[in-house]
Image 1 (cartoon, helix red, strand yellow):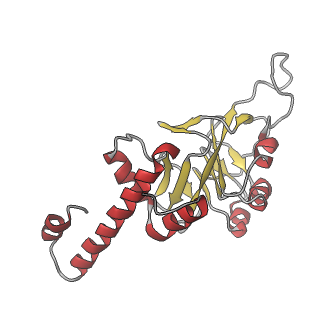
Image 2: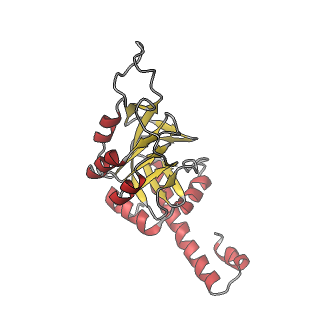
Image 3: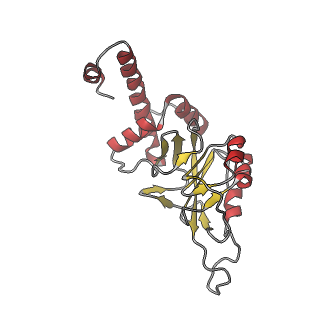
Length: 227
């Protein structure tokens, strides 16, 4: 039985009880081969923690500007609309388009924060890093880079299914990020995953306490079967 009744309780429980490491371990044990986004996607600061529901965004490289077969005459496609579509406690998570360009800066991240977003995850770079850090909203990306947005990426859809690396992200999936990376937890399996991860994490605390008391890792593993 779940230890929570609504998202706010779930998010608070994750923040109190969990890190991405036990969540990733449990997901692999349950058969999810790729529980984590690629390791290149890192928090802008190591102590950032992000928990929320996925609002996926699909980018594509824009067609050459002025081409008669282009499907969107705007230089950023649906970028602004995708930001405005955010709801409280959602994570703006974007894939596609050129990784080497910055996709979000401080102004759009500010708007995401004002709309109540839980964080942003970009399979590329961000820019205006110091200003984003000052906003206090968790941001995960390949890094920071001033190389700009216009005519280098083009949002074509949002609140849709996307893929980052080997991981499929769908609207409403649970996104959990910390200093070790970002987990994507399928919504239909989140109760089992979170509950098992909490159990594992509590056992790991006992192992840590045993080691602190001088017990060998061999004996601690024999007793708790977790490490």
